[in-house]
Image 1 (cartoon, helix red, strand yellow):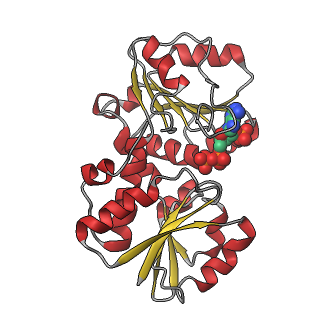
Image 2 (cartoon, rainbow, N blue to C red; image 1 turned 45 degrees about the vertical axis):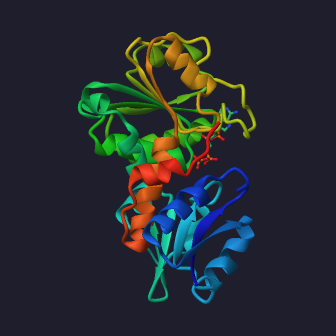
Length: 277
Ligand code: ATR
């Protein structure tokens, strides 16, 4: 039987099997979804044997979205621009890489903000593969002011420097006064870090703690466990719109599943498979 699956490490909390098994069942496909919990050094062998093992594609999660690139024969333009892939497809002995994270993020921005992003001030916390996809989505949607804030400043600087726009800037997480100013004027704030994630290194952490926010701010936390993170509670406290990472997770899955199978699974089918706390 042909296989699809997820590459990552750890995979104990992944919701991807539930999401994709619901889609496989919905279309009655003869496909098996597997979890591939791999170390970086095991990726080479995985991709060498993938075709022989009837693997036709799959998704890629933390920490391998950048590590997998060297095993692909081709990438699409989004992977080239973002520098990370979250899906691959195997066809005619060739491995193709895709990024659907930026599509998922774009779709999870509410229309009220999406339609006038060029007028809005955006703040992105983090500078990993997810942050790169978020910045790309905001850039594509014509956002003119994006501040990227990261603990490791060099990584934020690297992302900002890829774009020729002078409105895309970087800040160090320690630059409290500058961050206060950015946050106070922000219309859209995105957390791409693992701070606040229940299984992560800092589950009670909140990068907005102590800062004043606009009352009509929208906050999107890519974390979805817990459903309401400390970051999102802070957004709500100021009267803003709080959105967790579930919609982005499903939209990126929907786009990836369609690349591999050619089937567009309804959002609600994928969402109903999730049992969330
Ligand atoms: P992903 O692919 O999901 O983006 P990642 O590449 O591991 O995951 O990136 C995680 C991001 O969360 C990074 O920006 C990281 O900051 P560093 O670049 O300084 O490592 C950020 N991050 C993780 N833990 C953090 C913490 N406790 N405080 C602040 N930022 C944190």
